[in-house]
Length: 178
Image 1 (spheres, rainbow, N blue to C red):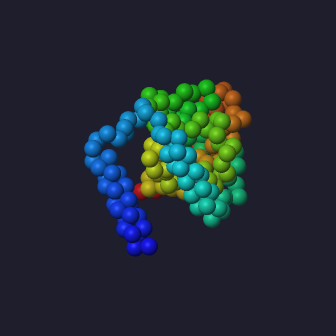
Image 2 (cartoon, rainbow, N blue to C red):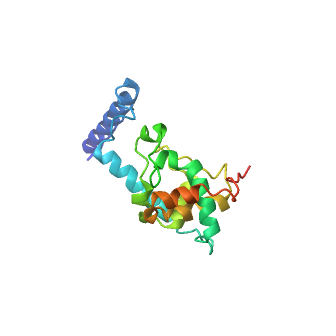
Image 3 (tube, rainbow, N blue to C red):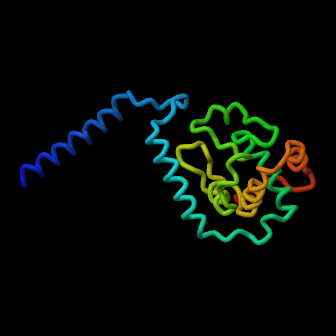
């Protein structure tokens, strides 16, 4: 039994040493042009989805999150803060958005996968290692709920309807929390 334990310890030390050696060797491909290994992509996306769903379940969206004025303000903020990476109806992501890896999700296609509370949580807290920033330190919750509420409407929005909402001028620009 003691021999098996020693072999296990030696194996663990060997694996750990190999891992540390690989990290320091400079051989890891960290380019944003190279995709993750399939197992890495699965682990990161699964962990993110479950973590967001767990944390967002504790949130209570405002009752008027779908109010027309809130959606207009959300559209203006989304256009200014999000469309460059995610695109929008009739709007391609900009150069920075196209260069991110993993690629930001096309919210026209993916917004329906998330609840308004989950979209709020993602917008407020960001997502590590994806390029998705946390807007909570720079924007108040009211603005972030407006954006989340608007994102839930993206899948059914035409390019002309998006342009009309995003061009709304009677609403304030995004409020900052600091």
